Every structure is written in C-alpha cells, then in structure tokens.
Length: 505
Length: 93
Image (cartoon, rainbow over all chains, first blue to last red; front, side):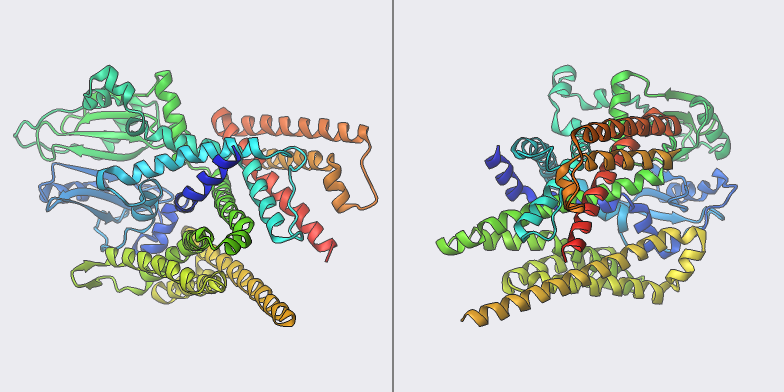
C-alpha cells in the first residue's frame, strides 16, 4: 500500500494538482467571468421579463442556426448568454437583461469556458483524451485516499496534528496528513462524484449491454429527451413569459435556468426548459418541452426515478450550481486543502529522496522537483498570467490571425512552460523566483483591473452587484501577501543555508 | 441555525482535540487530562457533533444539511489542526 500510495501520487500528482486547482477556481467560475468580462458587471433587474430573451432568439434565427441555447440571467451571472451555430462554429453572445440589447464581445473564455473545462478535460479534446486522463486521476485519487488511510499508522493519535516548528520533512508530512485525513470525506466524495458525472464515458458497458450500442435511445429514455423534425413551414414564437409560466407549472414552481430552442422559426419549433437548481442539490432537477407556437406541453420530466435522482444528487453535489454561499466557500477552502494535500505529498517524496538520489547520481529527484514546481506554483503563475493578459489585451486584439481569447490561452501556456524552464534552469532558487513572480502578477492583476475598468476595491466593496469582483480582488491580495511571505521566508532560509555552508568550508 | 451548527461542529472537534494528551501537552506543558476527563470530553464532543448534524438538517433540509455538515466538520478540523500548530509555533519561539 505504501508503494502504491507513493508511486500513484508521484506519477499522477502533477495532473491531480491541475485538476484540483482548476476545480477549486471553478467553484467561483461565474465570479471570475465577471472579473474578466467587464461588460457583465451589471445589476440583475428586479423584475426580469423573459421577453428580453427574444432578441437573442431572433439573432440566432437570422444566423440560420438550427437551435440556440439561451441561459437566463441569475444572481451570479446577471446577463443573458446565448449560444448558436454560425459559420460551422458555436459562438457565444451576451445580452443585456434590462434591454435585450447585445453586449460587445468580451474576447475571452474566462472562467466558465476555459478554467472550468480545463478541470474536467485539461482542454485536450482529441478523442476525449483529456476526459480519460481526468477519469484515471479520479480513480487514482480514490486509491490514494484509501491507501493513505491504510498506511497512516497513527491515524487517530495524529488527528489534528500539525507541528510547523519541527524539521521540514515532519512539518510537510503533518500538513499532508492533516489535509488528507480531515478532508478525506470531501476528497473521496468529490473524486467519486466526478467519475459518476461521466459514467456514460467511463463505464459504458451497462449501456452497451442493454441498448446494444444505441446511445441515443439510452439518452432518450434516461433523460426524457424529446425531438421532432422541422415541418418546413414558418412558425411564430409565442410570448416567452407565457412559455416559462407553463413550464414552471409543470414543475410545481421554479424558474428556468436555460431555454434551448430547436427548429427556430419553424411551425414544429419547440423549446426545452431546465428548471434552475438554486434551491436543490439535484442537477438536473426537472425538464419540460413546449411547442414554441402554441405553448403546448410536449414532455415534462421530474427525474423522479430513484436511480435518476441518485445520479442527479451526486452530479449536483459536484457541480454546485445551487445558491448556497456558505457551501460554496466551504467547497473552495476544501478544494485548496486538496491542492495542499497533493503539493505536500510531492514535497515529502522529494525531501525523503533528495540526499540519497544525489549520492547515487539518480535523476528522479530533479525530474519530480521540476514537475512539482511547474505543476504547483507554475500553474498558479499561469492562471495569474491569464488574468493579467485579460486586462492588458485590447478588446479587439488580434495577432497573426489569433483571436484575443486564444492569445490569453497562449499567455497561460507560455508562462506555464516558462515556469518549468525556470525550475530546470534555477533549481535552487526556483521556489523563491516563482513566489515573487506570483506576488507580482497577482498585484498587477488588481491594479490593471482598476486602471482598465475603474473598479477599485473601495468601489467594488461598496456596490452590491460588484461584490464578485471585490471577492476576486481580495483573493488576489491574499495571494500576493502569501506569496511575498513565502518568498521572503524561503530567501532567508537559503541565505542561512549558504552562510552555514561557507562557514563549514 | 447554520451558524449554531458551525459552532457546534467546531466545539465538538475542540472537545475531541482536548481529549488527546498529545495536543494538551503541546499547549499546556504541565497539565494532562485525566482518563475520566478524556471520556467526558469525547462524549460531549460527540454530542456536539450530532447536534451540529441535527442543526444543519433542520435549517437546510436533509440534502443540503448533510453536505453542509460534512464540509463544516472538515473545515473545522483543519482550523483546529492549524490553530494547535500555530499555538505551539508561537509558544516555542
């Protein structure tokens, strides 16, 4: 078990850290969106009319898209977001919920389109390879949780034990044990629920054996999906408030989170409405299909079958789309604890082998050292570079045909690669370098946000609908402070070590 | 009620931590809890934790309540572990 725990952690630790870090940030993905898309920093109108979705529908119809997905605004995302097919690619459009007018393209993938997909796919879409790697890491995390409990001989007597004053190796192991043992229920549940969400991809044998490979039939039966072809006769769209009212009655109350229109402008047009999940853990909670011309209810599903409810609950507890700020913050703290767990695991491995590997001339430690630095502080650095690039690039930036949103991602990847290069080229100072670089980038992000949008911390704290922006700024201040403290402490230790070495020599 | 549940979870774990001589000796150098005090602390701790579960479920419903309780316990445990570490760190400086 010790061997299994060690090598699973060392081999997959770097990827696991990336998954946990991006997952932790995804807890506040909509808030990151508002920070990165200044046009969305508006107040949700108190009496929102669903008629404000009509301009988005009409724009999608004009673009001859066969369907359009329109996300209704809510407290965390106060703008209307519409997706439709244009020029063989799905494009995202933002609309003002007060007027229905289209907002300027913000040229960023921000939290919901970059950070969140990175969490479950590593942005490797080719043959869903990213999903498979994440699935493997999810399984590995569960193996690590179980094997970690088994190899921890003093699990009860060491409960709550953290001895920062002891030597580095002991303190790191204490922190690893503390975050691992106390956060165990969360880490296990979050890894298991992540696998359950992608059950159709990871465990397809049940679907294969029952449906003989007919995935569409499975989806139709499991999720009560309704489809019908176009009639090729023009049709009108009935008042949207009426459509929402009828869907809401079918769920016995509740607003929709999105409206998915099919066969736009056709007599056979229909719309799928998913009930918002702000007041329930279940995700999805309920679905209704209505005729867009007559408003007739075509299909309504409450997902009330036991297995369906269990799957919805497990998925919902991972997605955390519910409106529960206490739980959201607790998830965030526990996500960070998961990052510390993985990071300290890598550091412990390095510290226990550094001297021996050096003596034997083995290359294991330098490789894992570079991996540990690049995948932990390097990833934090890359994320901050993503934010800084977002505030530095002009709205219509374009370089050699590369769009603004792609430029942001290139900045992210470039800084990430540089962090690995730094860890290889300056192995003795790499943690110090990266701590100071993190502090500098986090401080720059706050200042750039102020300069480019006028939203300084005083203003964002005093205006209620700007609190998400204030939250990100406060988090950035926290990162700056922590990185400066860590950097200066490490520098002092390095200076002391050098003094001791010169005294000995 | 949610705040009460959070305080009960924290308090319950504090009682558990204070029943461990390993931690009490790190904070109070010359005092060790007796066996009966340890049993009492664990009993009170368990009662607090169960009350915290009850409070979470009453205030948030069963689904949110259980989720909240598990997360509260984990975060409270981390806070206690880090606090004990910080106290020891300061006292030995």
